[in-house]
Image (cartoon, rainbow, N blue to C red; front, top):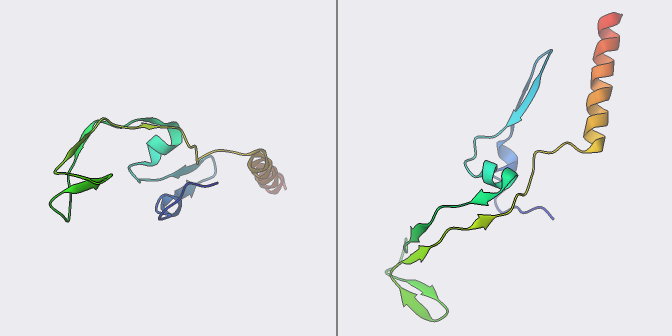
Length: 99
């Protein structure tokens, strides 16, 4: 199942190609940690719109978060069917170039 909340990452892809190359990318800051996994830095959590945070019936002004281990969730991958489509496109291009 796809992990998706706002579709911001999915909608951010930019593609470019020319006669010798093709690129796909995104400028969304959290894309790399989703693709490769990693560890977020420890940070302080403070309330934005209230005077305190509520956790399990307790109220606190701030929380020291130790950071999170994010597992890799690769989204830029080539499937076997993708490789077949690429090969078909290259073959079509070469046939047109020869003729």
